[in-house]
Image 1 (tube, rainbow, N blue to C red):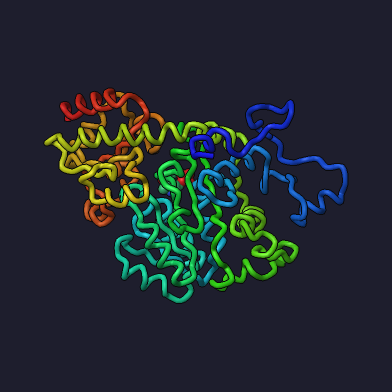
Image 2: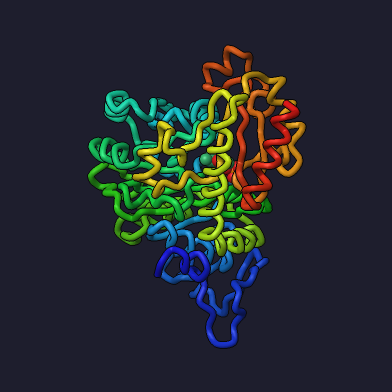
Length: 420
Ligand SMILES: *Cc1c(COP(=O)(O)O)cnc(C)c1O
């Protein structure tokens, strides 16, 4: 099936007389007729549900859909994008190990890698995504267990050269994790370019309506854990009845281990209600992503022509430095987020306070157009010098184009620019 059909149909196939729409199974637990059946479930010999922290029918249907959309073998939903990132790294690296990450990543991920995982004994080597030599050198460092990057970096709007990153990671027998939140599988499927694990904050475009937090980890099913010496996959897990993930779950050892070991112990499962809401969002993802991209392109072109604006970043613009990679990895569609610089904080505030359709929100990637001023919100604690170091200009505004009529978004920007 084509991706448009998968968005609508994948993951749930009702039997005779069953609900047409995947039901919300708001139940923490499930009932069985015999102790033997429950024993088989615990031994992973039978498929089924026993406790919603590990698996739930609603959640499972949505996981199946997302695995299908990404072209992966299995997926596991989590309570947030942060939980997905955390579990994907902890599934590979332990205290004393290292990871390598692109320096152009989401701020929350940066803090996780730079502060919290570091405190847990996992060090992160950050590299400029375009510095091939730096990447090769970092990946060869002793103890590196994972390489991490974002397809379309939030907020830098840089496109990751996934093919190159996968090649370098595989040269050292280390898997590549790609955060595909901003592109979504509609615009890019990182497995097709060599990624091994894909993660998302489903709170963004996948949900698409700013109603539910969530995250997901998708297993590409191809990485050779034996070759990389990942004993936690290739030797018996004594904490789970001696299961060997690469033998009993050849297709999806990564997600199986993340579920039965890490989700069991750390417990950051999505709620079935949130999984249900996420599924409603996914049913129109293939309609929304082209519309977000089309609107953002026209808005970016409009902003670029305005003399009062110093610079515009949007990978969908032909003149943007990221456009060649955007063509290769995202079919030339730039997704919905634009950043532009009006010069200083005061102008940025006047422009944003004058906007009417576009609302000030600390969020991106939903159906409604929103704006964010990093220097006075998400990066407020930084001095002007620190802002410069983080690549954030005081007058920079992040605009998340919704799926309204683009003429209305542009008219709103026009009147706000006149008030600036
Ligand atoms: C928002 C975001 C996250 C974190 O996701 P939450 O659902 O907010 O925890 C991770 N990566 C990217 C690229 C994001 O935009």
